[in-house]
Length: 95
Image (tube, rainbow, N blue to C red):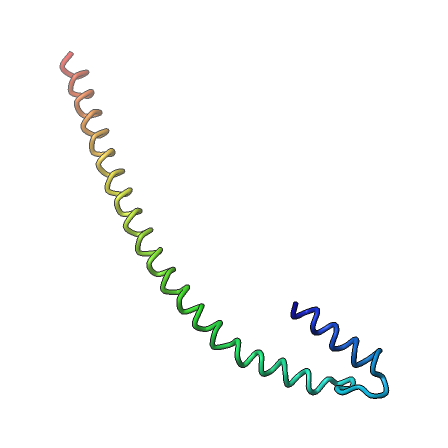
């Protein structure tokens, strides 16, 4: 919608209203409007980024906990495999 507004603005001022254009070619009024829109959008964008950062921190903490549990389980599996190998070696040696 916003791009359509910009196209209509420029089309209306350059081609349709060549003699009585309310905002001639350098489009100073359009620049003022765009600057005001940017000034209004900037704080909203910053607030949404801060909220997203908080969510990312929570997700990162959760990922860390899951990875830590997985690492503990893998270490337990390694210990079990080591015990099995050790018992097999002792069983082979005793035969």
